Length: 173
Picture 1: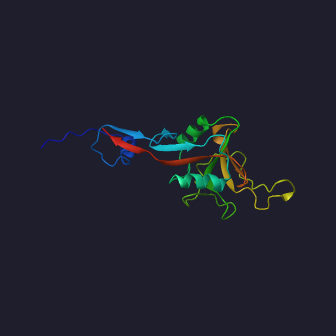
Picture 2: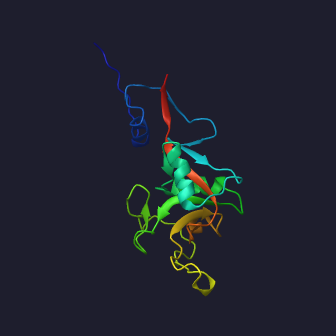
Picture 3: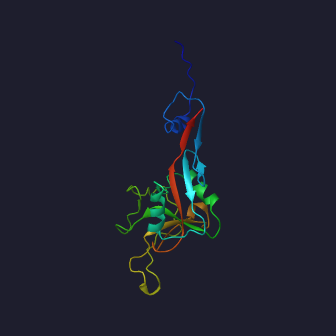
């Protein structure tokens, strides 16, 4: 029996792990309709007509069997910054509602403080006249001054769009 081996880059190996078969030379990543593919992940970016609270956005993602987006790289951040419009705000899966200042993703993991894109945030503002004593505990992505400054903490009850995330489906060819 004869086997041919090719040199494979780390990036290709990383992407192949989602396909489950390293011997497959050709594969295609697919997303469901109304989802956007980037790398090996699919994203659902809600329409302007669907603005909900942070909990509402998370519930809508969970109803689809997924969760709010967890931004884990500069490339992922750049992707969203380039996708969103100038006055649109979208919930991401980041909150400090359990413990003030302890920002966690919806999967329970801590925010990597070396990979954040806060715009003068978080500040836990309580509103004018302290009308929101719980403060700003949920995170959004918006077109900030730059892509490196496009996250903000706001009141979780605010109504915004939301972004869901899931692994892409892999089709072997």
